[in-house]
Amino acid sequence: MTELRGVGIGLGVAQGPVARMAEPLPAPDDGPSGLSGAEETARVREAVAAVARELEQRGAQAGGAAQDVLEAQAMMAEDPSLEAEIDTRIGAGRTAEFAVYDAFATFRDTLTAMGGYLGERAADLDDVAQRVIARLRGVPAPGVPDPGYPFVLVAKDLAPADTALLDLDKVLALVTTEGGPTSHTAILAREKSIVAVVGAVSATGLVEGEMVIVDAAAGVVTTEPSAEELERARNRAADRASAAAAPITPGALGDGTPVPLLANLGKPEGAVEAVALGAEGVGLFRTEFLFLSANQAPTVEQQRESYTQLLAAFPGKKVVVRVLDAGADKPLAFLNDAHEENPALGLRGIRALRASEDILREQLTALAEADAATDADLWVMAPMVATVEETEYFVAIARDYGIKTAGVMVEVPSSALLADRILVDADFASIGTNDLTQYTLAADRLLGSVAAFQDPWHPAVLRLIREVGDAGRIHGKPVGICGEAAADPLLAVVLVGLGATSLSMAPTALADVRASLLLYSLDDARTIAEAALAANDAASARDAARAAAARE
Ligand code: PEP
Ligand code: MG
Image 1 (cartoon, rainbow, N blue to C red):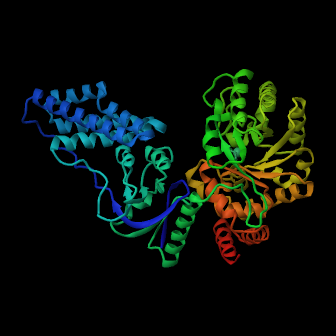
Image 2 (cartoon, rainbow, N blue to C red):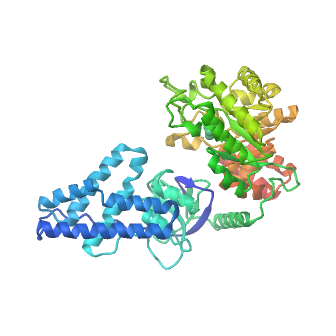
Image 3 (cartoon, protein in one colour):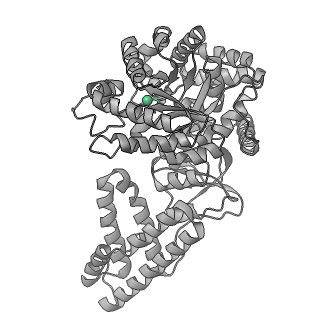
């Protein structure tokens, strides 16, 4: 068995035989055209228009985000500057096929060079070119294969037109060798809940018909799986299906110990979906997400409006709002102006707010006003707290504004190690496992080359979490988890075993975690956590927890 790594989209797992996407059409040759320029131009116009209309039609059929993507592609096909590029080549005596091929390639290279979001759109342009050339040649456009049985689709990167209309009865999972988590393939796979691993570079070696397991939660494609692995994957898929169908109950362990399940949100509009999926409140509202593109600090009024909208969606429920966490992966123009060699270790989070205390004061004002206008139970916390002194500072300033429940995030090892002292002042702690893992393992959370270190199952991270859990128990104060770790169904059990009293996650993960917690008692959770803690590395901790869980 071999494991191919990529970026998993969602938490699903699926298995099946590989079917590869047809290779692109061969490049047209650069020979002179036997037709007149006018004839070639007429052929191109007809082909481009036909492809654009077909894309629009597919969009209308698919609806949702897919429709937007396909309509954008149709517009790309008929872009006037692209048309001018094609005409120039036809004017120079080229065939319509070659003119399309070459003009689109030039555009694609320009987009790729821009990188980022526009770079991700390059695949969309390739797809349009292939469709136009296929039309000119009178052959079917390359697309999703149909081997006659359900399959795992393996492609370089899928065109939106193909992803949008995937027949989910036939496509068990999707693996791409290119494309990242922000590619259209990923966006559409997420929307349609297709089990997907994208950017799995080594998947180029997968051959037609071979059996694979696609584990989106782990971002892994397993080749030549053993019978035991296949069965485990099957059981997990069945568990997910029944979790999704199970009634929504308040989060709890099997022995009735309550473990409130909360939502991580970045904008108030997300509240509706979170409530529908059974969120019992909000465990992390990332306020900086509201202002990522702002050049000026937001006004008190602007903020009050957003916070009121959020709080109003959760009457009587706990809503934990984090004050602006600016810096490193989330720079805010109005808070982070200095150049720093290592922004993750720089003036970020509470440090940046302290340096611009007016902004913190205005945010607390807006929060207190929104609180007064609504019935939610508002908790406010500070990000990236590293010392007891920072805790005292934040709790005192929050109290000045009448914030009743003020806490800190534990994302830096120093604050985990001193959690017993931090919780003297703070009303609660919320562990951000994403940053806690980054700082414990000294591995940039955005850097692919060190992604293997960014694993919250690492026993060093678990030990730090236990410190905080123990401190919470001693002081009788809540300890929440709001990093991605809380969304891993088995790790969620471990976290409760280590002392977490609530778990907050992306709303789509709630059903899986709810179902997993119900399988174990608090004693079981503690035993499973001990097994993970005793391991030497993340992979063994995961295996040890699985083995212990199977015994419970
Ligand atoms: C974390 O670090 O785990 C966390 C929840 O905060 P963010 O991901 O926003 O940095
Ligand atoms: Mg963080």
